[in-house]
Image 1 (cartoon, helix red, strand yellow):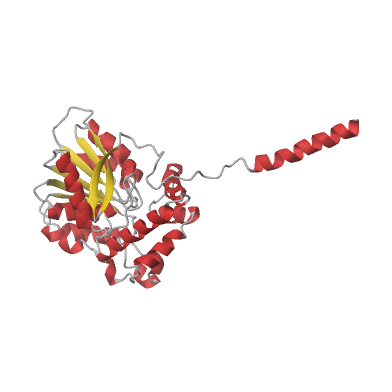
Image 2 (cartoon, rainbow, N blue to C red; image 1 turned 90 degrees about the vertical axis):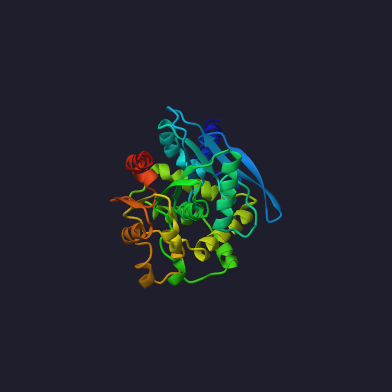
Length: 333
């Protein structure tokens, strides 16, 4: 009897080992429209028909929480992000009395992911339609990363709407076609299908001077979307919008922007597109933000340049106090 009890106890012990080893659960898939992912404010949708497809553009419309000043700020997200990553900036602006509109561009975040011909003209025009629906005739336009390219195009297309232009470490301060080899959208799409958790994390670590645990959230959002049954559709959109960035430079349009400009540049940033297909020699000439920032500030007619030492690609994450000080100070002039 004692032997039987001992064998039974051993069997129970052996059964618990795999359970302990499997305590870390596999990540749950996340829908490509970020279903189930909470945003910092209610999300609404603008119905649109683009190139024969019915789509919906998601956006947040956040009223002033401080004494309202009657002014509006529009925030444009980067390529590998979505409107929710502006949560701290939304809070700072709202407290300062601004109405804040944060669209997820079509193809990103909670918006539809149609297979269409993407262009900065198209995205800027749809954002203008959103502002018209919200009865906003004038706004300050803020763009980060890819959103900086879009904000530049918006300011050029709609100067009567743009009271201020604020660019936070925008990509597109150079024409990538000069040094980055071209690849077809189909090739870029196949690359996207090979995305892994580690490849997302490795790339996002290049954004920062110092990696912090809270940045992992944005790794997991992108990775968990790759587990969705609809991921191939998102992978195509990602490839198509990378092609948009490559083929539609805005750097040549800087002298045509009439709005007063604030250019905030984290000096440690070296972001460029097509990094994996660029030669080591060419890579030393791309993404040199200290130089690019100074050059851009000379090209824009009404530019103020703020340089942030020891800050990478996302100042509103790495140096939020300095970012908000520069942003609110510029808007308050």
